[in-house]
Amino acid sequence: MIAAPEIFRFRKVESRSITAGNPTGAKAGRLPEWRHSIDLQPHEKKRIAEVDGPGTVRGIWMTIGNRSPESLRSLILRIYWDGAESPSVEAPFGDFFGAAHGRMGHYSTPCLGISEGKGFWCFFPMPFKKRFILEFDNDQDERVRLFYQINFTLGDKVTPDMGRFHAHFNRSVPPVGKNHIIMTARKTPGVYVGTLISALPCTKGSWREGEFQFYIDGDKTVPSIVGTGWSDWFLSAWGLGVHQSMYGGSNYQVKHPELDDRYYCGCYRFHLMDPIYFQNDMKVEHTQIGFGGTGDFDERSDDWCSVAYWYQNLTKESLPSIPSRAERIRGIGQQPWEVDALNAVREKKLSTDGVESGLIF
Image (cartoon, rainbow, N blue to C red; front, side):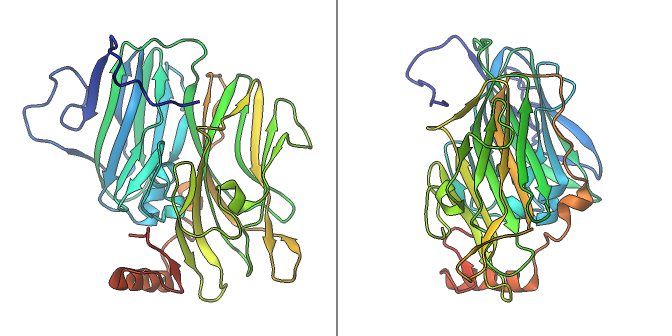
Protein backbone atom coordinates (compact mmCIF):
# COMPACT_ATOMS: atom_id res chain seq x y z
CA MET A 1 0.00 0.00 0.00
CA ILE A 2 1.22 3.52 -0.80
CA ALA A 3 1.45 5.64 2.33
CA ALA A 4 2.20 9.31 2.82
CA PRO A 5 5.79 9.95 3.91
CA GLU A 6 6.41 10.61 7.58
CA ILE A 7 7.37 14.21 6.99
CA PHE A 8 7.99 14.79 10.70
CA ARG A 9 10.75 12.15 10.77
CA PHE A 10 14.28 13.29 9.86
CA ARG A 11 15.93 11.16 7.18
CA LYS A 12 19.40 11.05 5.73
CA VAL A 13 18.35 11.77 2.16
CA GLU A 14 18.92 14.70 -0.17
CA SER A 15 16.05 16.53 -1.85
CA ARG A 16 16.57 17.59 -5.46
CA SER A 17 14.50 18.95 -8.34
CA ILE A 18 14.88 18.89 -12.13
CA THR A 19 13.52 21.79 -14.18
CA ALA A 20 14.44 23.48 -17.43
CA GLY A 21 16.52 25.87 -15.32
CA ASN A 22 18.31 23.02 -13.52
CA PRO A 23 18.25 20.16 -16.04
CA THR A 24 20.48 17.83 -13.98
CA GLY A 25 18.90 18.46 -10.59
CA ALA A 26 22.34 19.16 -9.15
CA LYS A 27 22.75 20.89 -5.81
CA ALA A 28 22.84 24.65 -6.47
CA GLY A 29 22.69 23.74 -10.16
CA ARG A 30 20.43 26.43 -11.55
CA LEU A 31 21.61 27.75 -14.90
CA PRO A 32 22.68 31.41 -15.01
CA GLU A 33 20.05 32.30 -17.60
CA TRP A 34 16.31 32.47 -16.84
CA ARG A 35 14.60 29.34 -18.17
CA HIS A 36 11.34 27.63 -17.21
CA SER A 37 10.56 25.56 -20.29
CA ILE A 38 12.08 23.68 -23.20
CA ASP A 39 11.00 23.19 -26.80
CA LEU A 40 10.61 19.80 -28.43
CA GLN A 41 10.86 20.10 -32.19
CA PRO A 42 8.59 18.02 -34.45
CA HIS A 43 9.41 14.30 -34.10
CA GLU A 44 12.17 15.01 -31.57
CA LYS A 45 12.95 12.67 -28.69
CA LYS A 46 14.43 14.35 -25.65
CA ARG A 47 15.68 12.96 -22.35
CA ILE A 48 14.65 15.52 -19.74
CA ALA A 49 15.76 13.62 -16.62
CA GLU A 50 18.59 11.19 -15.92
CA VAL A 51 19.51 10.53 -12.29
CA ASP A 52 21.79 7.96 -10.67
CA GLY A 53 20.37 6.25 -7.58
CA PRO A 54 19.46 5.03 -5.19
CA GLY A 55 16.57 7.41 -4.88
CA THR A 56 12.84 8.00 -5.21
CA VAL A 57 10.87 10.19 -7.59
CA ARG A 58 8.49 12.09 -5.31
CA GLY A 59 6.45 14.30 -7.59
CA ILE A 60 6.05 15.32 -11.24
CA TRP A 61 4.33 18.49 -12.47
CA MET A 62 4.04 19.45 -16.15
CA THR A 63 2.09 21.48 -18.64
CA ILE A 64 2.14 22.17 -22.38
CA GLY A 65 0.75 25.02 -24.44
CA ASN A 66 -1.21 23.12 -27.09
CA ARG A 67 -3.61 20.92 -25.12
CA SER A 68 -5.78 19.75 -28.01
CA PRO A 69 -6.79 16.06 -27.91
CA GLU A 70 -4.47 15.33 -30.83
CA SER A 71 -1.47 17.01 -29.16
CA LEU A 72 -2.10 15.29 -25.83
CA ARG A 73 -2.09 11.96 -27.68
CA SER A 74 1.01 12.76 -29.76
CA LEU A 75 3.46 13.56 -26.95
CA ILE A 76 4.66 10.25 -25.49
CA LEU A 77 6.07 9.93 -21.96
CA ARG A 78 8.52 7.10 -21.23
CA ILE A 79 10.32 6.15 -18.00
CA TYR A 80 13.23 3.71 -17.72
CA TRP A 81 14.44 2.15 -14.46
CA ASP A 82 17.85 0.84 -13.42
CA GLY A 83 19.49 0.50 -16.81
CA ALA A 84 16.63 -1.36 -18.50
CA GLU A 85 16.65 -1.08 -22.30
CA SER A 86 12.86 -0.91 -22.57
CA PRO A 87 10.59 1.53 -20.71
CA SER A 88 8.43 0.60 -17.73
CA VAL A 89 6.17 3.58 -18.42
CA GLU A 90 4.90 4.35 -21.92
CA ALA A 91 1.78 6.42 -22.44
CA PRO A 92 0.56 9.58 -24.18
CA PHE A 93 1.00 12.71 -22.07
CA GLY A 94 -2.71 13.40 -21.65
CA ASP A 95 -3.84 9.86 -20.92
CA PHE A 96 -1.03 9.26 -18.41
CA PHE A 97 -2.22 12.16 -16.26
CA GLY A 98 -5.93 11.38 -16.60
CA ALA A 99 -7.18 13.08 -19.79
CA ALA A 100 -8.77 10.06 -21.47
CA HIS A 101 -9.18 10.58 -25.24
CA GLY A 102 -7.62 14.02 -24.68
CA ARG A 103 -10.64 15.30 -22.69
CA MET A 104 -9.63 17.34 -19.65
CA GLY A 105 -11.64 17.89 -16.52
CA HIS A 106 -10.31 19.08 -13.20
CA TYR A 107 -9.73 16.29 -10.68
CA SER A 108 -7.47 15.68 -7.71
CA THR A 109 -6.40 12.41 -6.07
CA PRO A 110 -3.45 11.30 -3.92
CA CYS A 111 -1.88 9.80 -7.10
CA LEU A 112 -2.68 11.94 -10.14
CA GLY A 113 -4.53 15.08 -11.03
CA ILE A 114 -5.24 17.82 -13.56
CA SER A 115 -5.68 21.28 -12.05
CA GLU A 116 -8.13 23.51 -13.93
CA GLY A 117 -7.54 21.58 -17.15
CA LYS A 118 -3.97 22.87 -17.52
CA GLY A 119 -1.68 21.65 -14.72
CA PHE A 120 -0.77 17.93 -14.87
CA TRP A 121 0.75 16.21 -11.85
CA CYS A 122 1.69 12.80 -10.43
CA PHE A 123 2.53 11.83 -6.84
CA PHE A 124 3.01 8.08 -7.27
CA PRO A 125 6.26 7.36 -5.36
CA MET A 126 8.79 5.76 -7.70
CA PRO A 127 11.85 4.13 -6.07
CA PHE A 128 14.90 3.27 -8.17
CA LYS A 129 18.17 1.54 -7.31
CA LYS A 130 20.61 2.49 -10.08
CA ARG A 131 19.10 5.01 -12.48
CA PHE A 132 15.95 6.92 -13.41
CA ILE A 133 15.41 8.23 -16.96
CA LEU A 134 12.40 10.22 -18.19
CA GLU A 135 12.07 10.79 -21.93
CA PHE A 136 9.58 12.55 -24.18
CA ASP A 137 8.84 11.74 -27.81
CA ASN A 138 7.12 14.54 -29.72
CA ASP A 139 5.42 12.32 -32.31
CA GLN A 140 3.79 15.07 -34.39
CA ASP A 141 4.54 17.78 -36.94
CA GLU A 142 4.26 20.63 -34.41
CA ARG A 143 6.71 22.07 -31.92
CA VAL A 144 5.81 21.55 -28.24
CA ARG A 145 6.77 23.85 -25.38
CA LEU A 146 7.09 21.82 -22.19
CA PHE A 147 7.16 23.22 -18.65
CA TYR A 148 8.12 20.71 -15.96
CA GLN A 149 9.40 20.07 -12.45
CA ILE A 150 10.48 16.64 -11.20
CA ASN A 151 11.08 16.37 -7.45
CA PHE A 152 13.12 13.45 -6.10
CA THR A 153 15.27 12.32 -3.20
CA LEU A 154 18.70 10.67 -3.24
CA GLY A 155 20.07 8.21 -0.71
CA ASP A 156 16.82 6.31 -0.10
CA LYS A 157 17.10 2.72 1.06
CA VAL A 158 15.72 0.72 -1.88
CA THR A 159 15.15 -2.93 -0.95
CA PRO A 160 14.43 -5.98 -3.17
CA ASP A 161 10.75 -6.00 -2.18
CA MET A 162 10.16 -2.53 -3.69
CA GLY A 163 8.69 -2.76 -7.19
CA ARG A 164 9.35 -0.33 -10.00
CA PHE A 165 6.51 1.90 -11.14
CA HIS A 166 4.83 0.87 -14.42
CA ALA A 167 2.17 2.50 -16.59
CA HIS A 168 0.93 1.46 -20.01
CA PHE A 169 -1.58 2.83 -22.52
CA ASN A 170 -3.82 0.83 -24.82
CA ARG A 171 -6.50 1.69 -27.34
CA SER A 172 -8.55 -0.98 -29.05
CA VAL A 173 -11.86 -1.72 -30.76
CA PRO A 174 -12.43 -5.39 -29.87
CA PRO A 175 -15.15 -7.27 -31.79
CA VAL A 176 -18.37 -8.28 -30.08
CA GLY A 177 -17.63 -10.99 -27.52
CA LYS A 178 -14.03 -9.94 -26.94
CA ASN A 179 -12.66 -7.83 -24.08
CA HIS A 180 -10.55 -4.71 -23.99
CA ILE A 181 -7.15 -5.62 -22.51
CA ILE A 182 -6.00 -3.10 -19.91
CA MET A 183 -2.66 -4.70 -18.93
CA THR A 184 -0.62 -7.88 -18.86
CA ALA A 185 2.36 -8.69 -16.64
CA ARG A 186 4.43 -11.84 -16.30
CA LYS A 187 7.31 -13.54 -14.50
CA THR A 188 7.79 -11.33 -11.42
CA PRO A 189 5.67 -10.17 -8.44
CA GLY A 190 3.69 -6.97 -8.63
CA VAL A 191 0.92 -4.78 -7.23
CA TYR A 192 -1.85 -3.27 -9.35
CA VAL A 193 -2.69 0.25 -8.16
CA GLY A 194 -4.93 1.98 -10.69
CA THR A 195 -6.83 2.40 -13.95
CA LEU A 196 -7.81 5.27 -16.23
CA ILE A 197 -10.39 4.22 -18.82
CA SER A 198 -12.91 5.58 -21.30
CA ALA A 199 -14.75 4.59 -24.46
CA LEU A 200 -16.24 6.17 -27.56
CA PRO A 201 -19.46 4.27 -28.27
CA CYS A 202 -19.78 2.91 -31.78
CA THR A 203 -23.55 2.35 -31.63
CA LYS A 204 -26.52 3.86 -29.81
CA GLY A 205 -27.22 2.88 -26.22
CA SER A 206 -25.29 2.72 -22.99
CA TRP A 207 -21.86 1.08 -23.08
CA ARG A 208 -21.26 1.40 -19.33
CA GLU A 209 -22.27 -1.97 -17.91
CA GLY A 210 -19.12 -4.07 -18.35
CA GLU A 211 -17.05 -5.89 -15.73
CA PHE A 212 -13.44 -5.36 -14.73
CA GLN A 213 -11.78 -8.79 -14.61
CA PHE A 214 -8.44 -9.75 -13.02
CA TYR A 215 -6.78 -13.01 -14.07
CA ILE A 216 -4.18 -13.64 -11.37
CA ASP A 217 -1.33 -16.16 -11.11
CA GLY A 218 -2.36 -18.79 -13.62
CA ASP A 219 -6.06 -18.00 -14.11
CA LYS A 220 -6.98 -19.06 -17.65
CA THR A 221 -10.72 -18.86 -18.31
CA VAL A 222 -12.20 -17.70 -14.99
CA PRO A 223 -10.83 -14.54 -13.31
CA SER A 224 -10.18 -14.41 -9.58
CA ILE A 225 -11.56 -10.87 -9.21
CA VAL A 226 -14.62 -9.61 -11.09
CA GLY A 227 -16.29 -6.23 -10.63
CA THR A 228 -20.05 -5.75 -10.51
CA GLY A 229 -20.31 -3.08 -13.20
CA TRP A 230 -18.95 0.22 -14.52
CA SER A 231 -20.39 2.70 -12.02
CA ASP A 232 -19.71 0.38 -9.09
CA TRP A 233 -16.03 -0.02 -9.98
CA PHE A 234 -15.54 3.73 -9.66
CA LEU A 235 -17.15 3.65 -6.20
CA SER A 236 -20.49 5.10 -7.32
CA ALA A 237 -23.66 3.35 -8.55
CA TRP A 238 -26.61 3.51 -10.92
CA GLY A 239 -25.09 5.52 -13.76
CA LEU A 240 -22.35 7.65 -12.25
CA GLY A 241 -22.12 11.31 -13.18
CA VAL A 242 -19.18 13.70 -13.07
CA HIS A 243 -17.64 13.63 -9.60
CA GLN A 244 -14.29 13.28 -7.93
CA SER A 245 -13.21 11.40 -4.84
CA MET A 246 -9.83 10.32 -3.53
CA TYR A 247 -9.88 6.85 -5.07
CA GLY A 248 -12.48 6.81 -7.85
CA GLY A 249 -14.49 9.15 -10.01
CA SER A 250 -15.31 10.61 -13.42
CA ASN A 251 -13.68 13.86 -14.50
CA TYR A 252 -15.34 14.37 -17.89
CA GLN A 253 -18.67 13.46 -19.47
CA VAL A 254 -20.52 14.85 -22.48
CA LYS A 255 -23.59 13.51 -24.29
CA HIS A 256 -23.85 12.94 -28.01
CA PRO A 257 -26.85 14.77 -29.60
CA GLU A 258 -27.81 11.74 -31.71
CA LEU A 259 -26.54 8.73 -29.79
CA ASP A 260 -28.15 10.37 -26.73
CA ASP A 261 -25.81 8.95 -24.16
CA ARG A 262 -22.70 9.94 -22.24
CA TYR A 263 -20.53 9.82 -25.32
CA TYR A 264 -17.24 10.74 -23.65
CA CYS A 265 -16.83 9.50 -20.11
CA GLY A 266 -13.38 9.52 -18.52
CA CYS A 267 -13.11 7.57 -15.25
CA TYR A 268 -10.34 6.72 -12.79
CA ARG A 269 -9.90 4.20 -9.96
CA PHE A 270 -6.89 3.96 -7.63
CA HIS A 271 -6.26 0.99 -5.33
CA LEU A 272 -4.31 2.62 -2.51
CA MET A 273 -6.46 1.10 0.23
CA ASP A 274 -7.24 -2.13 -1.67
CA PRO A 275 -4.12 -2.97 -3.74
CA ILE A 276 -4.33 -6.05 -5.98
CA TYR A 277 -1.28 -8.32 -5.63
CA PHE A 278 0.12 -10.94 -7.99
CA GLN A 279 3.10 -13.24 -7.54
CA ASN A 280 3.88 -14.34 -11.11
CA ASP A 281 1.42 -12.93 -13.64
CA MET A 282 -1.73 -10.90 -14.09
CA LYS A 283 -4.02 -9.85 -16.92
CA VAL A 284 -6.68 -7.15 -16.52
CA GLU A 285 -9.58 -6.86 -18.97
CA HIS A 286 -12.88 -5.04 -19.34
CA THR A 287 -15.92 -6.71 -20.89
CA GLN A 288 -17.98 -4.93 -23.54
CA ILE A 289 -21.50 -4.95 -22.12
CA GLY A 290 -24.16 -2.29 -22.53
CA PHE A 291 -27.81 -1.60 -21.98
CA GLY A 292 -29.92 -1.05 -25.07
CA GLY A 293 -33.09 -0.02 -23.30
CA THR A 294 -34.87 -3.32 -23.94
CA GLY A 295 -34.39 -4.59 -20.41
CA ASP A 296 -31.50 -6.84 -21.36
CA PHE A 297 -27.75 -6.43 -21.23
CA ASP A 298 -26.20 -6.49 -24.69
CA GLU A 299 -22.73 -7.38 -25.93
CA ARG A 300 -21.16 -4.52 -27.88
CA SER A 301 -18.08 -3.37 -29.76
CA ASP A 302 -16.76 0.07 -28.77
CA ASP A 303 -13.61 2.18 -29.01
CA TRP A 304 -11.66 1.89 -25.74
CA CYS A 305 -8.65 3.61 -24.26
CA SER A 306 -6.99 2.93 -20.91
CA VAL A 307 -3.87 3.41 -18.83
CA ALA A 308 -2.94 0.83 -16.20
CA TYR A 309 -0.71 1.70 -13.23
CA TRP A 310 1.16 -0.92 -11.25
CA TYR A 311 4.43 -1.79 -9.45
CA GLN A 312 6.48 -4.80 -10.51
CA ASN A 313 9.98 -6.19 -10.30
CA LEU A 314 11.78 -5.61 -13.57
CA THR A 315 11.84 -8.29 -16.24
CA LYS A 316 13.61 -8.51 -19.60
CA GLU A 317 10.27 -8.49 -21.39
CA SER A 318 9.16 -5.26 -23.04
CA LEU A 319 5.75 -3.71 -22.61
CA PRO A 320 3.39 -4.29 -25.55
CA SER A 321 3.81 -1.70 -28.27
CA ILE A 322 1.41 1.22 -28.00
CA PRO A 323 -0.67 2.06 -31.08
CA SER A 324 0.78 4.25 -33.83
CA ARG A 325 0.02 7.97 -33.77
CA ALA A 326 -2.55 7.53 -36.56
CA GLU A 327 -4.36 4.93 -34.44
CA ARG A 328 -4.00 6.98 -31.26
CA ILE A 329 -5.56 10.17 -32.66
CA ARG A 330 -8.17 8.62 -34.96
CA GLY A 331 -11.56 10.25 -34.32
CA ILE A 332 -10.69 11.98 -31.04
CA GLY A 333 -10.87 15.61 -32.19
CA GLN A 334 -13.53 17.77 -30.57
CA GLN A 335 -16.69 17.88 -32.67
CA PRO A 336 -18.71 21.09 -33.26
CA TRP A 337 -21.57 19.85 -31.10
CA GLU A 338 -19.17 19.15 -28.25
CA VAL A 339 -17.52 22.57 -28.49
CA ASP A 340 -20.97 24.24 -28.45
CA ALA A 341 -21.95 22.29 -25.32
CA LEU A 342 -18.73 23.19 -23.54
CA ASN A 343 -19.06 26.87 -24.46
CA ALA A 344 -22.57 26.87 -23.01
CA VAL A 345 -21.19 25.53 -19.76
CA ARG A 346 -18.43 28.15 -19.64
CA GLU A 347 -20.85 31.00 -20.37
CA LYS A 348 -23.53 29.95 -17.89
CA LYS A 349 -21.17 28.44 -15.29
CA LEU A 350 -23.57 25.57 -14.75
CA SER A 351 -24.51 22.18 -16.15
CA THR A 352 -26.61 21.76 -19.28
CA ASP A 353 -28.55 18.87 -20.75
CA GLY A 354 -25.64 18.25 -23.10
CA VAL A 355 -22.81 18.26 -20.60
CA GLU A 356 -22.53 17.07 -17.05
CA SER A 357 -20.14 19.64 -15.72
CA GLY A 358 -18.97 21.46 -12.64
CA LEU A 359 -15.54 19.94 -13.24
CA ILE A 360 -15.05 20.80 -16.92
CA PHE A 361 -12.73 23.60 -18.06
